[in-house]
Length: 349
Image (tube, rainbow, N blue to C red):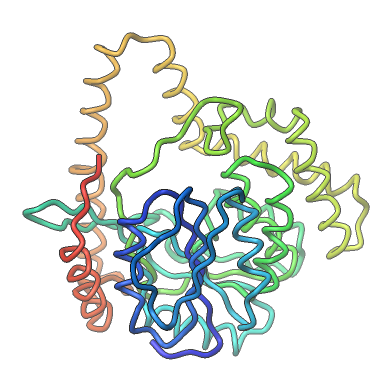
C-alpha cells in the first residue's frame, strides 16, 4: 500500500493486544497511520515508522478522534477499529474513485467478518443486504433519507478528510459512542454522495473484546429508546448541533434541520436490529440468568454458524465480486490478514 494522500486513524482503549496486532499489519504500508489511545497506560511496544501514536487518556471516543483528525494533512482518511483489517486494494480503488468523482464524499466496498480460534479462522459475509448501496440524490435532504432507508454504516468508509472532521465536531458535542457512527452517516451526506463499490474493503473481527452498558452514565451504552434519548438534554444538544450543520450546508432553517433529524431517527428506530437490541435488553432485565444464558447460546449458534454460512454460500454461488473467494487480489490480501491473525491469536468471547 503506497499513498501519500491517505491517513488511517485507529482509535483504541485498553486493548493493547489488539493494537499490537493492528500495528504489525499496517507497519509496511506506505501511508500515515495515526493511533489515538485513551487507555490509562501508554502503549510501550515498538511504534512503526509510519505510525503516529497519540495518548489521550482523558478524551472520550469522539473527542480523541476529532483531536487526531485535526492533525491530518492528507485529502482522504479512513477510520479503522483496532481489531479490523482494511484492504489495501480497496483503499487504492476508493481513492481513484473519489479523485474522479468529485460529487462523492465517501466510498466503501464489501465486508467480511472472521472468527479466529486455535484451530481455524472462519470467514463470513456481513452487510450483504446492502450490496450495491449508494446515496446519490442531488438533494442533501434526500441523501440523508436514503442513508437511513434502511441504514448502512459509513463509519469505516474512505472519506474526504474535512467531512470526517465535521462529523466528529458534531459527535463530540455528546458522550454517547453510537452518535459518532451516526454522525459519520449524517454530516458527509450533507456535503456529497456515497457509494459501495463491488470490491473487497475490510475484514471485521467478530470477537467481543469490550462490553456495552445499559447505564445512562456510560458513553458505551446501548440506547434502548431513541425518542427518549432525543428528548434528553444530551439528545437536544445533538439535535441542535445537527441543525447548525444542516443550515451551514443547505442554507435551510435550523428548525427544518431539527424536524429532519427527528424524522431520520424515527426511520432509524424502526430498523430491525434496533428493535431486536431493545427487546433483548428488556428480556435480559426481566428474565433470570439461568434462562437468558441458554437463549444467548442458541442465538450465537444460529447467527455465527447457520445464518452467516447460508449467505456466504449464496454469494459464492452467485459469484458476487469483491470477496476473497471470488477475487484473486482480495484472496491474497485475506491470506496476509490471516497470517497476522494467526501470529497474534487473542482470546475473545
